[in-house]
Length: 317
Image (cartoon, rainbow, N blue to C red; front, side, top):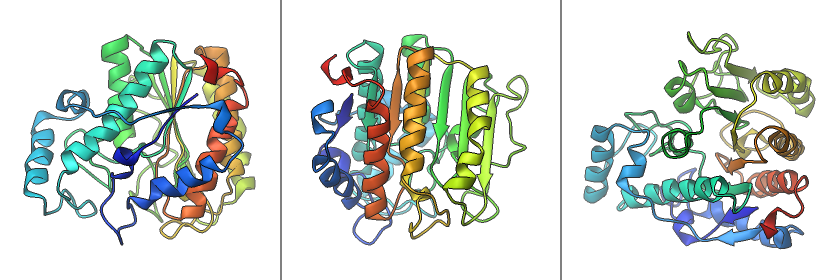
């Protein structure tokens, strides 16, 4: 398994005091380095992305707007996402790193990769949203289609917030299989992801949204387990993307779910087993949200543990 780590990734954030700051990376990294998993992975440096990479998913007008505001260094991309000097290049580092992970997997150098500062699932094709400048999830899906001729992709997201930027971009795509467990949108941003949203023709039935009530525990999450596995059995993919948001754990300052990191471990292990059966073990895991440092450390370390528990020799590939 490859893990991407370095200061260039940590730089994605909006300053001290903002919920998404540069310290999130180190909360994970320090915990991971103290874990028993270090010998089972290969560490890779972040990779700088290019404008052409963002254009795989985003409109040219939007990419240019980010570039222009980045040069100015102040202002707001949207009501939640401030501009900081150099944000264009910083956000493209997330994109480039995720695309390098896709490339390493597709060329068989590893079957699994984890990018901690990634999974920015709110940005739409023509705008930022919810701390997300470029939607690396959507960019990865488009790269798989346009650069590697991968048609069927499973995107699974256990972040507390609904992945609206991914869902609506591919709502009409019958080959983007989508599973999202999240806090019910009636109580949490972005207010979307109702169980009735299953995709639009010709993609009706290719999306599974599972909204959870505030206060939901592991027991309620796992009560939906068979719904997820049955859906996955019906929609075998060629590649799996898992967004491992830590803000679904109890104690996050801006969400209300009460899950534990056991959800991340078991979901990641299930995904690894499934990918080994259906798509040569190909799993790209992305950190996603999370604003409690202990939760970030626990959720992401346990996600990695779940993934590598199935493929002990993956780091040697």
